[in-house]
Length: 100
Picture: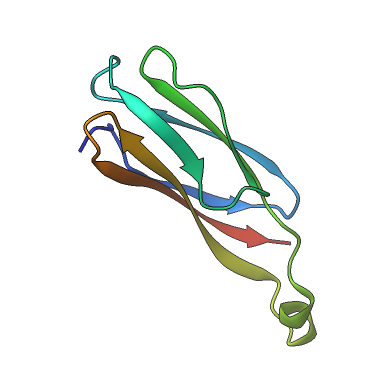
């Protein structure tokens, strides 16, 4: 494992909220070749710098099909795929309960 935490729980967040996450590398000199979010629309990844990788997750609204059946929340799991210089890879994940 190359990160202090490779899974972060954001707890409960509001729909359309902007949530900032920072992953901390165990080695600030980590050699990363590719950083790619699993969802390009809701997850934006900043520059890996000084051992920190900033991520911004924007929660979607509650889907209409869930609202129709009376649900006011959903669970979301996002991820960032990391590829290292040596060809190995790892996925950093985050979870959130999106609730009105």
